[in-house]
Image: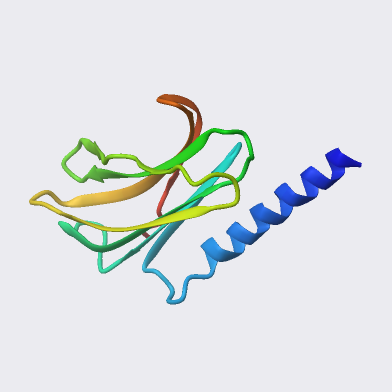
Length: 139
């Protein structure tokens, strides 16, 4: 009975986050989400199109889905049209199971941005346990 209840709570929390992550107050110009064991996250980007040099409005959300004493992190990844990538610093949620953290940020520079992604990970201290990557759709 306990196992069924734990699974039900996990499924419910995942569905809660999925609903929260996929229905922003305003539709984002670009959006991506990914899920890995114990963590899920999303990015919404407004005010940028492929080839632009700035992302004025970036919202990252990460959700801790397991009561396992580990924490979750999210970061933005940007690829450039001339080649190369930037992996931005991780944003951690240390608040535990059932919580999410939202980070508002922006990107500006001199190179044309070709695409963007998020990486969502679960950490045990400073050791990465697992992660996922999702690229935004740039049409």
